[in-house]
Image (tube, rainbow, N blue to C red; front, side, top):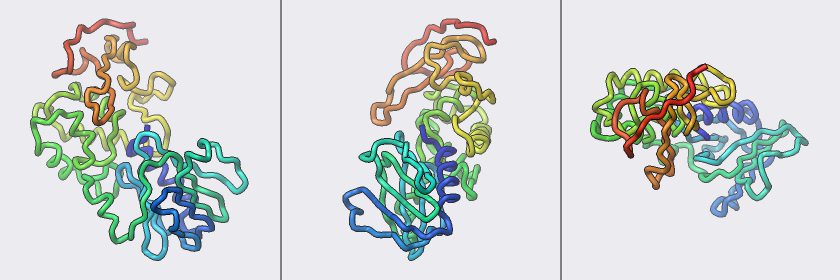
Amino acid sequence: MPEGDSVYMAATRLREALAGRVLTTADLRVPRLATADLAGREVTAVVPRGKHLLTRVSGGWTLHTHLRMDGRWQVYRPGERWRGGPDWQVRVVLGTEAGAAVGYRLPVVELLRTEDEAQAVGHLGPDLLGPDWDPEEALRRLLRQPDRPLGEALLDQRTLAGIGNVYRCELCFLRGVTPWTPVGEVDRPGRLLDLAHRALDANKLRYGHVTTGDTRPGRRHWVYGRAGQPCLRCGTTVAVAEREDPSLERITYWCPVCQRGPSPVPQTPRRGLPRR
């Protein structure tokens, strides 16, 4: 599931493959860009912004893409077989003499003048992995709606950019509150933002969003994806609320013992297996 650290890593790989090279192929497989031709232009930069990717090319153009839930970029060497999915899922092909970058299932593909990038990303809050990370501004934005549920506020990219559902669940666990706790009731919210920054920074060049410090399968997350399993801290069965916000289609995981605060349904904690 793409989050800010996943997008940062994708940008790093794309930058290594494309930056400073001239495009020999630029196939944008979306109807409104069918006649756009970037071939012959040099890729000048690949910049992550929260969950957005900005691929800049000479002549003042930027290819803006977003992975959302299912998108993916894959880099291939010359002659290497494409393995990211069937051909009909390909939305973008950017080729150079050194290989190709292929974007699969990209829900957002648009071509902007570089000077107009703010149209795509100007609404975003401070980027947790950006050079402009500003914890004070992020805290100001987080606290401006004290009655808002913390989990909802963390997912709002206008508050701070880069957190998705994995980190929403894990950060709430690590701070000991449920995602439905009002922001104004969270103790020392600045510490939560510092934790968010450190977590994404630690994972920005590896797969898996590891939050426990344990990279073994099944032990990388405290609660995310662990519905019905024992909490790794206290052994209580991890609770799940499925799609409590249908507009976002998010599933929430939490520990009824380790996390204080409101929940969408009454919970009767069950003790699971003791932590090994």
